[in-house]
Image (tube, rainbow over all chains, first blue to last red; front, top):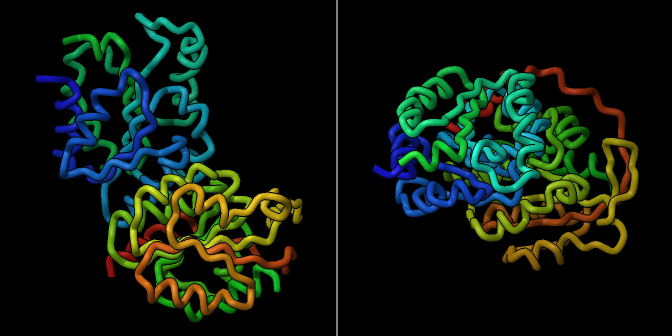
Length: 165
Length: 184
């Protein structure tokens, strides 16, 4: 089965009904799969902090939400993660393309990659790193864990993961 | 008329409604004049009132009024295309435009100079954009609620502030009672 479908199936199984996205080349398949899924509302956002605001509102309105974005967005969203998502104790699965890892063709992506895990650790955000294709089978448990503990949770997905068919 | 007077005048109209209150003085003024469980007070995160309001409106059917400011909308200008392209007729965005960053000492914003937020909202694709003056705010908000059409209101007023206490409610308490009001 395609990874894109497995990922969105796990979202659906965990009753996530609204997903905001800011695209990344690595995420194009999963975003297309989301867009095609009738059971989920897809709201493209112009910036990731805006997307997190939409997710916060949706959750308080009774719908589980999630965000799909690139790891560069961690740099954009620190204030929102801390003063909104964490301060109000809101659950937020963050499916993140981990650019700048092995196989990366663009040097600039490495600059943010080297800070990504350190920033997430500094923020006290539970972080999972999908490197092999089989890692996707943890997604269901990670989503359950996120809605159990009411925290933002990062799922970093690197190029090796997405290529591991 | 300054923002705090507009907010005070709006309290009866907003009674029982789901209200997302912008960071800083707008939240503090709503809390002082018209605290209710269905007010969501933003204690931080400048710029996201409209985004939180849109998410809330997308997730359920009750009317949502997001109170924003010109400075905050300028901070998160990407919100207007998102709102325009994801129409929810239970959503009202009320931008109180005093042409200044009121909570930080009334430094002027570009909305008080050459930039028209009403024109920006229209250019972004928002369909019901109303610019009004402070003394029209109550009637315009009341009409927007009754219209059941997504409406963007830019309410012009002069800058200035009154002393108001900070909100000491715990954020989790704010969220909990707000979510109970959403469900009720």
